[in-house]
Length: 486
Image (cartoon, rainbow, N blue to C red; front, side):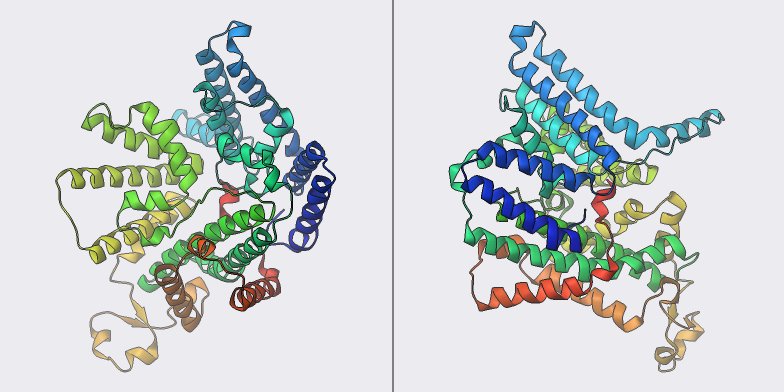
């Protein structure tokens, strides 16, 4: 089920909210938790119920492993062996569903075999609930978390606002909130604040991200050739589509959860304002960055074993991060580029050099914009089609109206015609959306800053109502969230 759907907005969310707090008002705390688990599983299985048994299997196995880690002395097994089993189970489950086709395709290509591909459909949210549970197992191994209640553990994993696309949660930051008696009664300020943040996120997704989507799709998937301006418009369209799509999801998840008095961790903090690649990863998908740091980079040795190992660990971490996002060489290339960029940044810092802030932002933003091409492209050839056109000066096309005022441009090989014909966009609309997006991203406070400054008044009410109504009227162009694919 999508957050940006009529079923969710008008049926699932209000019914779940009302029944959950009704059960709490009757002091049926366990019943309320069980209801929220069942509602979350319904939310998960709305499109394809066949994957509900899969997430239940994952939950039961991980719960059992977690209990074994807490009580490993009683079962006469080392906690390390139990942890290794748990991690192998999770990685194996994720590997089977996400990477089987990729591995077989490459095996066939290398050895000339013809093993048929099973074309396994990726279960929604498997990357997120797998990483969430790996983090729980490692925390249990470190004696930082424990859970004896199956219902509590199921609620931790399935809680619907985060289930399909994050954030990646820690048990110790969530369960105390569900156990707090202060969160068992309706908090009208939290409801108002949650609706405010939800409305902003809905607007980002439906009105902005989904407007960029067809232009990015046309440029990457449909067009066989692109002129220079179309190529840059294609890359920027995806750069802003992904920004507002993921930012919108994070806002909606946080807003929905606030209505239930539960605070999800911030997952998105104006990443395109970053002045270097390290700063970008402190702002983009923050809970994934936290996971990669705490459960991959640091266990590999972090920066404790010399400069060479530090750079190697950075590269390895981001290769894993790239592969986590998708089973394809383009994701591996994307991860490698970010790992190399972080190593270069670290080396630059070690030399004590500093850079002008505007230049630092310009380099960082363009690096991110260019590397998103590999993240989005369906294969290497599609990526090179866009990237090559962005830096080719023999395919510049300007409008005839503009060329008529600067005839000398024809003499240096610039052609006249419809500028955005290959990506099916109107020139004025494209420029307006790109300019507005730059303004929103760089000059306005983000929604989390607005959350901290929130005051219930006529201005915030009118903004919420406008965003919700405009978005609902635009729901005819529904598309799923991009991070659902990861």
